[in-house]
Image (cartoon, rainbow over all chains, first blue to last red; front, top):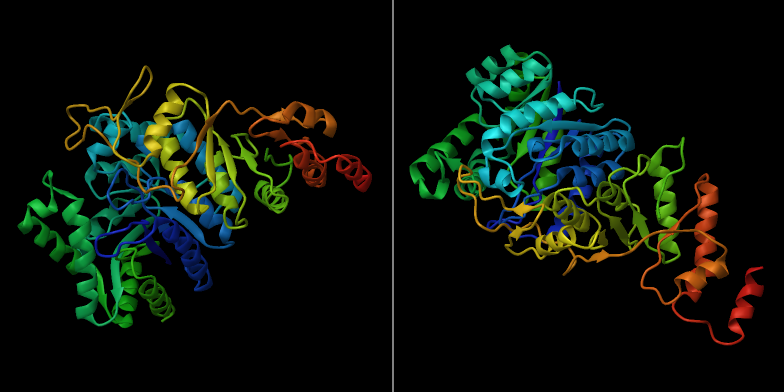
Length: 291
Length: 210
C-alpha cells in the first residue's frame, strides 16, 4: 500500500492569512521534502472564485511541482473535469504525463458548488453527463484516473469506466468497506490526520474544519455558519473518522486500511498554514509509515 | 519563441533554452504546439529552473476566458510574477482583462456570458472574482504581437527597430542550433533594437563580433 500526502489547496485563510506567491513557492519546497521523505505522491485540490484563493488550476501547479521533482508522483484530488473542454483537458494531462515521465495521477470529480459551474456557463444539472462524456474522451489518457466521490453515482461511474476510486475523507469504516467492495480497480482512501497530542491534534483539525465547512460547504444548501448544529455535527464526524493522536495511532490505522483493501492512502493534513508545523507533520508521518 | 526540437524529451530542451534566454535578458514566447504543450503549464514547468525570465503566453481565442485567466494567475504565482498574455483583440481580450483585475466582474458579450446566472445554479452570484490574485499588481494582456522568422541580423533590426516587443521564431533545428540562435539574437540584434548605437559603436560592434 502506498502513502501519499495532501491536500495542497494554496489557501490564504482567516486562521492563517498568507501571500499566494509564497504559498506556491512553498508548494515546490514541500514537494521536494515529500520526495526526500519517500512519499508516493503529493495531491492538489481545486476550487474557484473563493475568498481564500483556493487554487483554481491545479494542473498548472502540478506542472511546476513535476518539473521540480524526479520521482514524486503528483495528483489532483480532484480536478473538476466537467467544467472544461475535454479535448483541452486531455492535451494538458498528456503534457503533464510526457514532461514528468508518467508521474501525474489524474483524480477527477464533479464538485459540489453550483457557482463554479455557473461561472463556466454550465447548468449544475449536467455535471454527471459532462463527467461521463469527459471520461469517454479520456478513454486512452496515459495518466491513471481516480474517480472521486462516495455517493452511489460516483462509485457506479468508476466501475462503469473501469477506473480507480478516490474516496474522500470523513468516511466511516463501514462506508469504506462498502465502497471498496464495489471497486473494480484500485482504491485510494483519504484520511484527515494530525500527529501529536490528541487534544492539540483535534483542535488543529477543528479550526480547519470550522472555517472550511462553515464558509464553504453547503450543508443542506446553506453554508455551515448558517447552520451551527449541522456544522457541529460535521465537525464531530470529521474528528471521529480522522486520525488524531501519536504516530502509533497513524501506523495502526494505516495497517487497518491496508487490510481493508486500500491501495493508496492520502494522508490529509488540515490546512495550508503554519509551514513549520506542516514539515514536522510530514516527518512524523514518514516515521509512522516506516514503522 | 520557445519550441522543443523533435525527437527529444521536451522539458530538458525547453529548460536549456529558457535558461539561455534568461541569461541574455530576452523574453520567452510560448504558444501551444505539440512539442511545447499548453503554454501556461509549460511556463509553470519552467518556473523552478528560472528566476527572472518573463513569459509571453499566446492565448487560444477559443478557450474559455475564465480557464485562461485562472491558469494565468496560478502560473503567475508559480513564477513570482513573470507572466504576460498575448490575445486576439476584441471580446476575448476584454473578458481576460476584466477577469484579471481580481475584482468581482461580469462579462456579457457575443460569445461569452460570465457568469451564466442560470436559475437552477443555486448560490450563483451576478458577478464572480478570479482568485487568487496574480503575483503582479496587474497581469498584462497584450494584443497585436506576432512572431517573425529569424532573419539576417541587419534585416531583423530594420524590421523590428522602434517596435514595442519583438518576437522571433527560432530555427527549427536541434538544441545546439537553437542555443546558437539565441546567442546570435542577444549579440547582434537585441542591443540595436531600441535605437541606433552611438557613432562608431555600430562598426565596433560588428568587428568585435566577427
